[in-house]
Image (tube, rainbow over all chains, first blue to last red; front, top):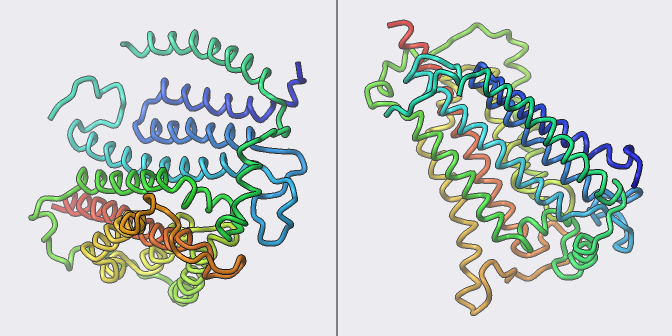
Length: 118
Length: 250
């Protein structure tokens, strides 16, 4: 079994996931909950980049290096770009919902949103 | 569920998740020893097959182009959702324009910096967008930078200046055009009997700005779409803030 140092980035990703979950569960404010969701999602960046990393690997840009050089995995980096874009718009959409929830119920606490009202 | 029950459940489930995750993480291949094969295979192929040197963009806009089309429509739908959720009644929109002015007296220094900053940001955004197939960058990044440039006008001037240059309908049409252009670039090859999103344009010389065929074109259309989307979101939120300020005044 490799030492814990060899899996440290995976644990950082797990830690971010738990931090985000903890924040969501104990949230007292909807904006705070949205930010916690963003933190939770950032754990996936960490995990994706950690999986594709190679010690001594160059960035996957062949503009100024030879094509025979070993590079880190570009597939997970492309996935991560998708991830970031989706996170940005999900946050925008959720914040719009927070504004509406505040307008309808006059409160920004997740505990006050028990029933669905039209 | 009461808050207490929810917390208790989390303090049981959280550690369980942590230990299961930790067990799994310890059994993953050690960090930094990526073994492939897909990343290595594609990194070898892209330069020869597509004449693009930024592998990440070549994957996003070509090999995985169908996914990115979906991603772009996620962006489009989410912005649509924001604008639908926060839409205003006609009466709220036609409030006297004079009341909208939040004419704060800004220092002359801030306003003097505005124009050069806008110029530099725009040129940087265009550079990042046009060189996406060669160096890190591409449509998504360029779109965010270009939108930031225009938001600088709001920061350095005021809301009415921002509203003057970003007409709601123009931004909306631009956004739709950006999203539609991607789909159209994908559909054109179908008429020649080629697969959807096939790279049908001559690939050009590797390292040239006009190289890599549809990768550069799609990147540009994504850039237009992202710029318009972000401007639209900022526009809608500004409208919301101003509507809120107006209703407090009433």
